[in-house]
Amino acid sequence: MIILASMIDEPGDLVKFQTLYSLYSGAMYTTAFNILENADDAEDAVQISSLKIIKNLNRLEMEEIHDIKTKSFLLTIARNTALDIWRKRKKEPVSVEEVEMDGLAPSAEKIYFDKVSVNNLAEAIGRLDGIYQDVLRLYYVHELPSKEIGKILNINHLTVNTRLKRAREKLFKMLKEEGA
Image (cartoon, rainbow, N blue to C red; front, top):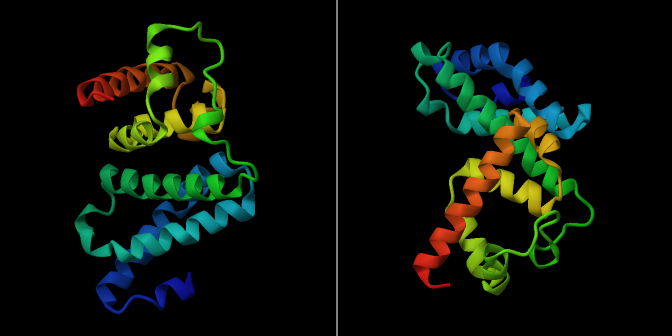
């Protein structure tokens, strides 16, 4: 933390960062560890997240430090950083073209998506809300079961299934409107 603290110029920002770090670094570590399942990688995620927090200190007021929104903001940074590390760590990434929708009978929806170009699909996924992007990528690209996705995202596996269903519906509607 000393090296991180040396990167801060303003004394008020230093106090703010030290307070944030002491309050939330443990929760950030836990969030990262739940995703990465490796202590060293989780510590790296906390350090990288701390750098991102330092860059965004101007967005936080001292009065807001104990606010639940601040905690959510910091844990989201830690979660996204851990997911980035996790994705980079994967040795054999699976392309979207290789992914098959296991367990689904061929439906009109599947036939439609098979015809859509991969680029259009990737762009459409990028325009979805983050909660839908995460579950789609973890389910289809990384081929994780909904229970594992639930652990990674800290949500119930039934919520994962609901988000997958809604994400597919939103993608279908978005691509249909674009004429893809």
